[in-house]
Length: 164
Image (cartoon, rainbow, N blue to C red; front, side):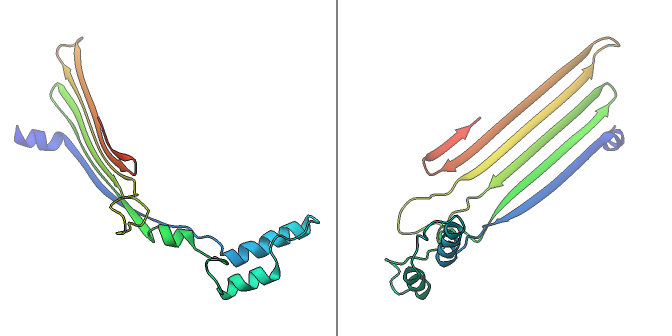
């Protein structure tokens, strides 16, 4: 019976890791130049003076002429996600079965600051389970049992939620 079970069972397993990187934005100086160029092309007066552009480029006063890369200031360089999947299926005499399990983990993309006792990320952990069992009771009677469950543990700045 053990050899029969080993022959008729199929197993698949995979692990997937993903990395997402933050994008990029143009700086304040490039934005001001492009905005002025667009307005000039439309026959309108530029919004930013050359003096303002030069002072921003020279960083003479970062409070009055700011040039902040907000993506770099607030986001991690990269963030990861993982997915693990296990499937087992087979058939033994009059019984066919399929069992699947999935784990998903997604971490947040924002930097954490020790200044506040507050986590501003969205983190998700999800567990999926599925089971299908078919038993052929007679030539004309088939009994099927299908079970499925999802448990999600999600943390977001507004609080934690567990969904089942």
